[in-house]
View 1 (spheres, rainbow, N blue to C red):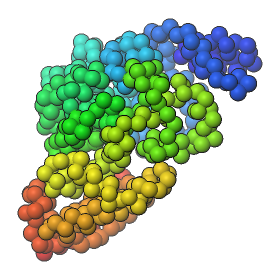
View 2 (view 1 turned 120 degrees about the vertical axis):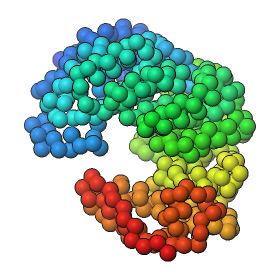
View 3 (view 1 turned 30 degrees about the vertical axis):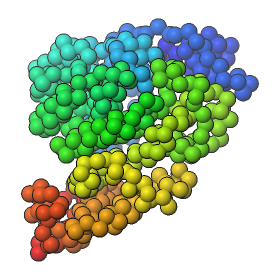
View 4 (view 1 turned 30 degrees about the horizontal axis):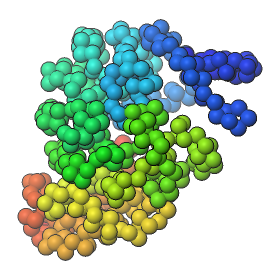
Length: 459
């Protein structure tokens, strides 16, 4: 606010001469990118203005049914800042490691306004590390409970900033989903990137959350400059552990170099623009081509478009797509992973070698194939495996694909198909090699916001 408000004041009041004095602002002048280096003061969040109803569209009344549905949630700015200093993250630079949280009364006032005005019942409490101050979160939860708001909400935090006791209090107050960054499954890398999580605690808390019916989203990274194959294997092991236990969502992203992060400062002179690093250049393939010259001449501002060449980063750059497929094909990917004796990098190397015809394409085309036809790279791999239960495994992939296809459809849809596995084996959670040689006919339907599935025949 201390940068944005003065900026708009200068623009709307036709005072371009004020631009140069606004702290924290990046801007172009005669084609040159300039930065006002002075940091604006951190504001007291409780002094920020409340909602301005002049900004609401008159048509919002037509959307009340959608806004109050279980599938809709409203983000609320509850606070900012993370006091930690992970080497890959810029947050500690621009928030100056200052953890802040709006008062419980202010947060509840915003919730009640959105409930009363729009009928909204679900919220995202926007904050990098919500539970750093457990006392304040306990106070917030107690007030939500005492006022009987009957809302659901989700948040982000760290494993080392949340206890089992606090988890249960947050659940009682309506928390249904939580996001947490793990980054690496390697104790060595946890130390090197200054994350310093106890990985046993990560496993225990993940299971505790899932056992208490709280959806868990976990975020992983790979391709750190000093990462080894052993480190990477440990990350995949932890990722598939979380999936196998019932983690709702996982993300595995390539290590990028953010402005002013410790990692970027350390490796800055070795970063290069490299079109062979397609996992990075896919960013320049989606709307940034016309800004390539600016990116090239302002490396310190756009280091995330630059690549650090290491054997591991070059060889395993497409590992991202293994995690991407796991979002659609959770059970199938777990079964496939186990056929490689739980060695994730062996799975990846086969996956890459059997899909060279895809990965040799420009980055935009690679992305398009995985978005529109994700079964193609799957079948390229599984058809090569020659496993005795390959028919059942491929059928399981098709079954999960159809669920995804129906659920994401924006219109009413029905898919009826016969699959080469017995639904009883699936529901019993048997290992794929124990599936019998049966078939199941299933009808999947989406009508409005409702998804339903009907077993028509099992043979």
